[in-house]
Length: 65
Image 1: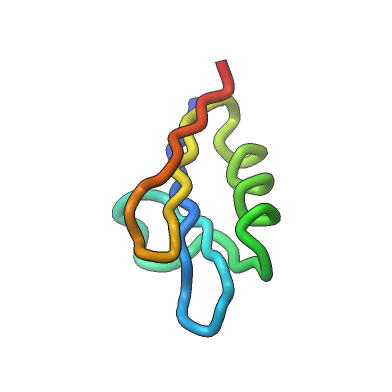
Image 2 (image 1 turned 180 degrees about the horizontal axis):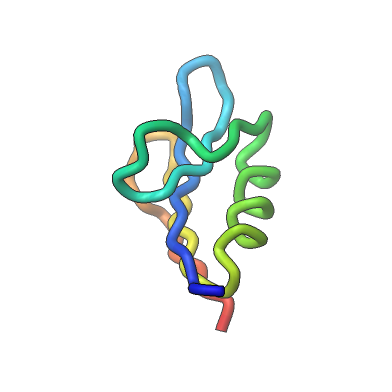
């Protein structure tokens, strides 16, 4: 399987979304940033997960090397 890229981003109302770049909709919605981050790592299959802060800016890049 190919390595994937996902972004963990805040949503209005306090939820966190896991999104692929240029996707029309989120791959999943989660109650906490940590839940979203863990799922993104699983889905990325060794790829890259960009974790955004509440301001929307990337605050962490995580690779499964």
